Amino acid sequence: MSTLESLLPVKPMSFAPATPTFLQWQGWQQYYALWLGVLSILSLLAVWWVVSTLQVVSPLFLPTPLAVWDKFVVVSTTGFMDATLWQHTLASLQRILIGLVFAVVLGVPLGLWMGCSKVFKGLLDPLVEIYRPIPPLAYLPLLVIWFGIGEVTKVLLIFLAILAPIIIATAHGVLATSTSRKRAALSLGASPQQLLAYVILPSALPSILTGIRIGLGAGWSTLVAAELVAATRGLGFMVQSAAQFLVTDTVILGILVIALIAFAIEMALRQLQKHLTPWYTQCD
Amino acid sequence: MSTDLRVEHLSVHYPEQPLPALDDVTLSIGRHALTVALGASGCGKTTLLNVLAGFVKPSTGTVTLNDKVLTQPSAERAVVFQDDALLPWLNVLDNVAFGLRLQQVPKAQASAQAQEALQLVGLAGFEQANIWQLSGGMRQRVGIARALAVRSEVLLMDEPFGALDAFTRATMQQLLLKVWHHTQQRIFLITHDIEEALVLATDLVLMTPRPGRIQQHLTLTFNQRWLQGEPLRSIKSDPQFIELREQLLESLTPKEALLEKA
Image (cartoon, rainbow over all chains, first blue to last red; front, side):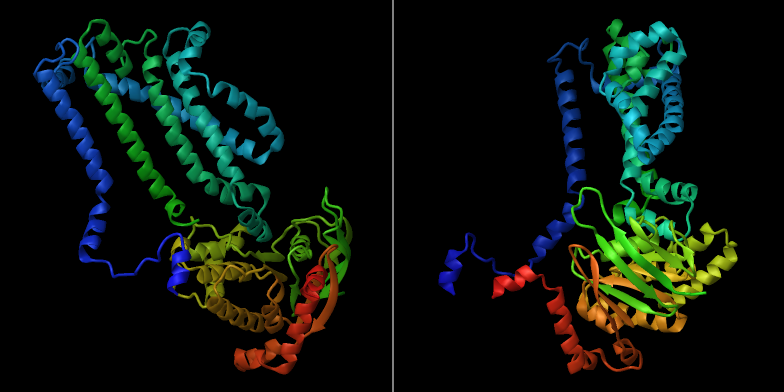
């Protein structure tokens, strides 16, 4: 027996019962990632606070957290560039919402069609794959030439950023629908339309929601680019014009608000996904 | 007029495959039969089931039910799959009523019929449960109930118990027999499990690969004994059962493998 054991690359482990301390550690581990996240954010804030308060860097470049908070109060109440923080935020949210609605209304049917028809997929796939990797800033000037400097161009830019992920995710969701699920429905008498509405579309829903999540992330990051063009309101515009006047505290404030909203959108969509498609994480 | 489900001179050639998946298969499945197609992988039993269901078109030959040629899937031939193929966004009752709702049966009537089917498979009380909360065996029961609820002419079962553990499998086999006995539902089931085929079938069709053909057709009565309460252990130790099992095993073992042993 002992000679056999010595042949093994690793000695067999003895199965000692888990000690209580080990179990306690496991319970704590559930929140491990959360605590680490909080810790790293607090450390960043602390470094910022120390560096700016000691004036290691000139306040012109790095204002203190307190200065940014004061700015928050001022911009929220009296405003910056003829609009309060809320009006800037609202302008940005409105643009992204309109872009999102159009992207879903167009992208989901196109994706469904791509998933159902090989011919249509063959035709549309190259177009999507060509435009998708282009940075939105690269085709922004072209959009300005074509559509002017109004709201249309801004919304269009965001729309295009959201569209591609939604089309791709929807088509993927359709193609990933299990064959036996589709065949079972057909053998229960489903017509092609019923198959699409009651089997394929719900099967693709988790994937579609993931597409929307990715798309909104992409759309939100093109926001600043969109608001570079002749905007008078919007978070991107606020950051950009504050930078031109070296109002660094407003720049930081704008960036923080943009980050917070992106985080809130992501969390809300995850909740929505959990609520709408509870089976997605819990079976197959 | 014949009420049989008839397969006549059926052949299926898949493109880019030298040998036909099915070669000149003729079979007749009676109104109350429990026909089991037994064979190793590649013998064409899945193709046969897919043709019966209407998922695969025959290259030559015909499939007829009540003297009518079948060409596409319909609710006359409900299919139960190995992976349950249920719809996780619907609860158990709505899954079972799904086929009826597709046929525009009013909701109240569909629910009543679904309830009845759930009772048959022993899942009364689980109507509101979510699919992802059920065990593999329970999901398979829902799959069977869903197919029963539409009261199809024939139930096609594609290795329905292949993914279940041994204990659950025996329970499910017995359940299937009871349901079959009670509903007089015609069933066509495919499997590669010899004992499963022997204890379930009234008609056993032995299939061999390259090309897929029916090699032997047996009429069996072991399932009657199980239904009448004889323990499975005693059926399986019957010399007649053992002899048939060994004979089938030999037919199913590829000839190359036998040569290697010799």
